[in-house]
Length: 297
Image 1 (cartoon, rainbow, N blue to C red):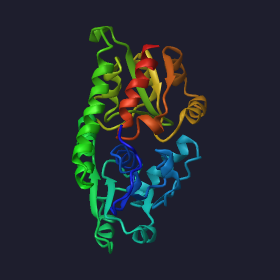
Image 2 (cartoon, rainbow, N blue to C red):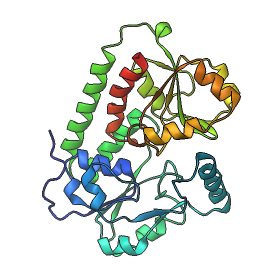
Image 3 (cartoon, rainbow, N blue to C red):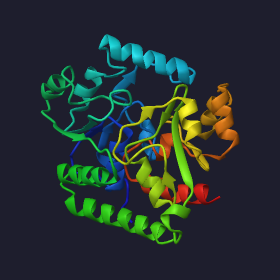
């Protein structure tokens, strides 16, 4: 097993998103991290590192209010997540790991207002941009980070191990496709969003059939009557950025009649979306392993 915190040889890495931080640690280079985003919390050791991003949205607000404020920020052109440029300059990174998938969740390093700031840093860091929409893209991004850190062999080993775990879980499912449980994964409840990107692949690998989205599609909002009409057998509540206790509270606050009918007609299970489904990194495979038990009952 790779040791997450090996002695740093001088390379200084700043990660602007949790998935990037988790990839670096899984490659055995956690000790090279000089700074992380405000949301990075895994492995636990990174919680003591300097934070180089901040969000203008209070994450303790109810789901509906968070969604409204996110929409307001997007309409105004003001990114909800910004970089503390002074802190970043002070850290003198050699490598910055960012993303260009979702400007709601993390800094978009390819955005017009961000890219010039990073290019002008005195340390002239290499910027690695992650942009996975599916599992293949996640594995490619791991390789991309490995190349940037001069750890290509470690990246190959990590990806091979993750693929092996996926194959091992998949081998447990003998049921033909029509007999597998119909699964709906909800990543936000007010308004309701159906989880897309890599999540349908996680469901398939865990032995279910995702009836709400296709692999690689973006997560989209769909009204409760439409979700009820899908008639899922299992509803997985895996809220983006929230753990299970918070997800339970958010779901309990939903009063929509179609939502209540949907949940009454299906088996409802919870998964920590913040840890396992929202972050395109190594723990997606752990999500499959957990979903296998949740979906199978």
